[in-house]
Amino acid sequence: MSDEPRCTPVRGNQGQDPDIRARAAEPQVREWRPGYRLDLASVLAPLRRGRGDPTWVSAGDGAAIWRTGTTPDGHASLRLRRRTDGTVVAQAWGPGAAWSLDGLPALLGADDRPEEFVAHHPLVADAHRRMPGLRFGSTRRVWDQLMPAVLEQKVTGTEARRSWRELCYRFGDRAPGPAPEGMRMPPTPAQIRAVPDWEWHRAGVDNARRRAIIACAAVAHRLEKAAELGGSEGRELLRKVPGIGVWTAAEVAQRAWGDADAVSFGDFHIPTVVGWALLGHPIDDAEMMELLAPYKPQRQRAVRYVESSGFRRPRFGPRFSPRDYRAM
Image (cartoon, rainbow, N blue to C red; front, side, top):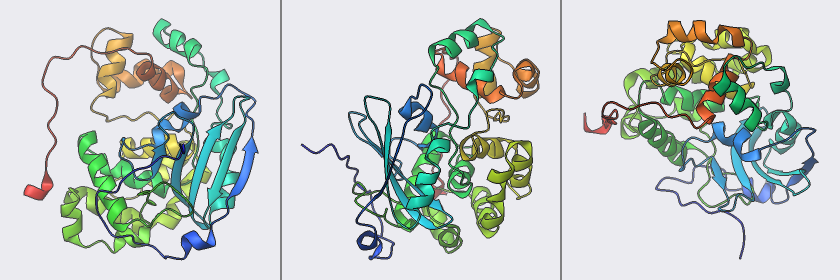
């Protein structure tokens, strides 16, 4: 039985040059063995936008992970698997294959510095000790992380993931190479700017998020500079676009350049979780900023340890219900 994963598209056009697969039948290959303990699935997990993400597929036994992404040279599909000796074998297809393979170490957290982290709370220290493989990877691409981050603004995860799926299926190209059935590329800035108003409505995207995404698409080539700048400078560049605030810039920074200090201030859940975990009561953003100050310049790593520790805050009310903009 083949170990190749499968996913089934819910709908949509095929939306690509039919010669892409023919041009990229043979993969480019790179083998790389990290000099640190690597948890492949954990490092890549933040790039996945829900279980039905058409830009990401993993085999049922975890033997291989597929992801698609844009590059300066064009589309690319990437297949990753880890051998028992720790070597990561990467295969890439499409015009951006070489660029993707060049960035393999960064994608898997080679530029991260978890060894410089100092814990200031027993729960964080315990998580740090138990999860040596928790690292921040870097995709080196802003656009692919920016669009889904904007979709996640002020809505439930269910709503954002459905919008991402539908926009990818309808307007994203098919993945180059022998990618699992149904995989799609993230829509390019040009493709997004061509989406008619009613299709945004159909995908469940309100006017505020639509305007922000279109504004980003109009200057997407300039925003890629943020990944080169990194840190607070990169986040500030992203925030020059209307509709991009602290939260969205941080979400992009964590993934595009592995920013371990970019805390998602403004998040509905994070201050409550951090407060309950470290102080035993909920806190607001201002209090969380003060609480995390000793962890600078790795504040987001502390948050990630809290989130990964297994701690669960008390729940006192009903969950926030998703909205259906298509019914409005």
